[in-house]
Length: 118
Image 1 (cartoon, one colour):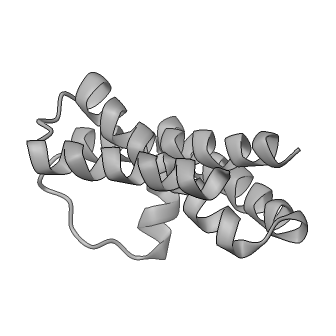
Image 2 (cartoon, helix red, strand yellow):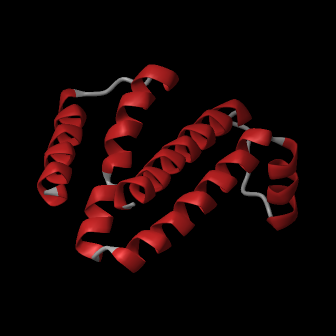
């Protein structure tokens, strides 16, 4: 069950971050700091933002369920798998340039996750 919950944390977190990044890039540079009404209108008009919020909620509640059954010393480091997956998807889906230091950092996080998981 721990791995199912971990997947329910990592995958929606990654989806939310990718959706948010893509949507904010589409918003353009003319964006100002909106108030609450403008934020709600923006979310209502952009399906990707609403979906990102839903994904974050799924991830949050899955994390709560995970820490009920597993030690926090496992849950937090293992959920860092989202950093690794986001780095890969940022390159593939968003066309971001991933420098060698960033790739090395993601590889180190992967090693840390393997150490914690055992």
